[in-house]
Structure formats: C-alpha cells, structure tokens
Image (cartoon, rainbow, N blue to C red; front, side, top):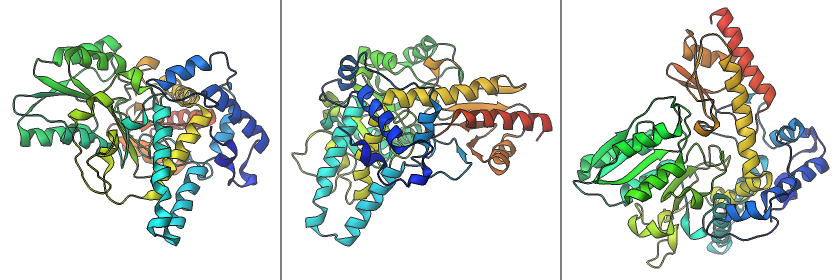
Length: 442
C-alpha cells in the first residue's frame, strides 16, 4: 500500500489551495477506489482489481478543487499552461525529491556497500510497474526510454530475407526508421498499413492492417496513440488480429504509458514500450519494455553488459545496460505510487476531460480544422489542429509569448497535449487565445 503522506511530505504548506488534511482524505479515497488497499498481482491484476473494488466510492472527476491540489504537486511556473505531455512532462515534487535524495546519497557514498540498496529499489519499482500495467514483474524491463525499448525489439526479433514486417505510416520515427534501416541490412521487406488521418471507425483501422498482412508477415508494430494525428489505435482488435495470424505484435506506448489505464494482459500484445518522461511524469531517461513471458524466447537482448548473468530471469535480460542513473531508476517506484494513489482510471478520465474541452472549444471556431477525432474510441490526450489560414508556427510561438501556453508546432498544425496538472480554466484560455488570433489575423 502506498503511503499517502510520503507523496506530499516535502511540499511547502504555502503552495496548497486546499488543506493538507483535505488532500490526504481525497487521495486516500483514490487509494481505495484504485484497489491498492489489498490484493496481489496475477495474470491480469487490473481486471481482478476492478472486480474487488466494484461499488467502492470514487472521487468525482469534475471536482476542480481536487485537481487543483494535484496541480500543486508540481513546481510549474506561475501562470504557465503546459500542454506538451506528448514530448516532456514535469515530475511531481515527490518524484523529483526521490531522484535528488538518492543522487545525493550515492554521491556521498559510492561504495558497493551503500549502493547495494539500489538493486532492491529497482525490484520494488518493477513490481509496482507490473501491478500498474497488468503484467507480472518478470515481464517488465526498466530501460532508458521508448526508443531503446523499440530498438530492443527491432534488433532482437530475428528476421531474415523473405520475411515481412508491417508498420503503420503514423508510427514515431524511433519505431519506423529503426525497422527501415535494419531491413536494408538484413533483407526483410517492410509493408505499411495506411488509413485516413481522421478515421471514421475502428473497423477502418483494423481493415487497413488486415488488408496489409501477408503470409510472410512475422511482426507488426504500431504507435498506440499517434503523436502526429492524435488517433488512438484499437489495440485489442489489432493484437487479436496478430495472434490470429501468428504475428508478433509490438505496441509503441510512448503516448499511452501514464495517460491511459493500461492492462497489458487484457490488451494481448507481445511487447509494449514507454518512456517515463512523458505522460508517466517520472524521472528523465528511464522507460519500460514489456515482453510477454511466452514470447521472451523470440527476442534477444540488443545490449549485453553488467549485470548480465546466463541465468537472468525474464525481461531483466533486456536491461543489462551497464551503469545506470540509480536515483532515476529508484524513482520509478515513487512515480508508480503517485499514479496508483490517484488511480489510473481517474488519471485517464481527467486527461480526457481537459482534452475534450479543448477540442470542443476549438471545433466551434471558424476555420479551425481538427485532425484528432472527437470520438473517445479514436482519440486520447493528443490534440492536433490547424489554426485556419494562420501561419501555424507564428500561432505556436504567440501562444507562449503572449498567453504562456506551451504546446508544440507540427508543420501546418499545432499539437496540444494536456495532462492532470492542467485545469479546465486553462482549456478555456487556449480557445480564447486562438479565437483572438483568428480575429486579429495573427
């Protein structure tokens, strides 16, 4: 059970907009609703958790006072509406302090005796991550980021001339480019599943993949949530399609890890990757790679260094990467505590609430073109839009320079990716700012 007090013990009293006691009470409600007051991890722990906690009281997702107190867990610049979770998230105060604490500790005494505890902390983090993601501890490797995890699969899954790999044209470059470069070396063929940037239905996406599969396809991989269009891929349906055809399925979870409630056992993928520095709001240069137990024999490690052993257990063989940032790896456990305490379902619901408010507001502005679907089944927290006839780069820059709203420029589009530290008032600020620029022609 996570200790709620330790999540907020170091936050100065003056930053609170509600009392510390009130926040602990609300967060404790999250612990109960998230089901971490008891139970144990199993093949699909999140499914069991849902069964055990059915009927338990839950925090009202619309209570802004609660979300303001969550926002105060972060040391965000005053007035800043940071909506760039698809690229980089801040860490809550408790995670920052965990990194600092263990970094200071290690620099004070770098002996083997003192550093021995980091192995235990890493295993503790692994167990918490597995519980959060609906996996077992032996299926989770703590690596450096999504790119490294994706490349572990593209380097470690054995392919030969004549084999085929199916990609989505919406995949992140760390996924697609890695396969394309290696195909030139090993001679396997790459095919692409393509569909409209704003698909009308799940069936449209599944059909694109089904039509692109061939008897020679051995692996397919797609990005769970596109960083360029915001489309949410139907993972269960695509993973089921892969299993039906005997195809290994790798899911790039860079835009879903920490944003969506994930149950990997129920999803049915063979592997899944994620970065802590994005929606998970964790330490920098740490990530996760999940490889389903039954498929670990099919994926070789791409880096073999300390602490490799020939009898290494499970997915740990993918994290023999040499010296690590011990404080950052240890802080993965604290980050998992933070998510679990609030509740993954609550994190997703809030993220969707703010993103939906932005989409609905922008959708009413004349000339604004939304690429990201309004349908919950086809979208998540990444919002892509074209600001009418305005120059997107200038709008992106003005959002920050005049309105202190930080998003991302994406060619002719703008990307906003809000998270749980954003408020509904900030969503209104975005719409007002774009409306003002459209009127002024800026």
